Image 1 (cartoon, rainbow, N blue to C red):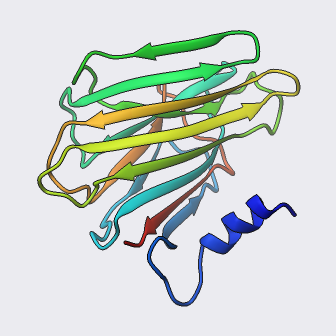
Image 2 (cartoon, rainbow, N blue to C red):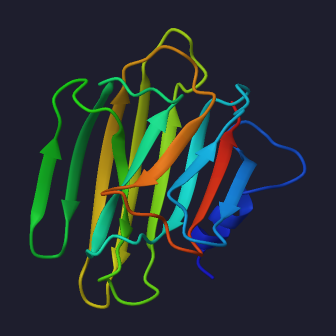
Length: 190
């Protein structure tokens, strides 16, 4: 095993948590296709949150956006920027400030991707417990579709000073997350 993989395993648990260490808050592995995944009652005792996601959707495409909605907030309070590439083309996109009602934080593979290929995403939610600051979300995601695929970075601004106590994840275009998709939430100690 590489040191990187060992570092990920080492940071994902342990008896005593020191500053900068990760504590498992909750995880879900889907036993059936599911439209949304919700994490609620998130304790406000961490510096940041990190989501580690392995996902595939029912969307009939190579990939589907993976969306987040914080504290059930349906207002146009999310702003998105993305830089991604597929090995041939680099793409940069963004939305107007406060322009969308939920934010696409990463991507899942879809049903036209090679069978059993899941996308991997690491999503950090900063300032989540603050009641005076807007929230910053950033992610790194990708998948290899046996010679094709994508890798990308996204950043999201959530314009809201209420502490994040819950959020819901969904797949784009009214699709669902497929059985076996896994979502793990960690808190980063200060």
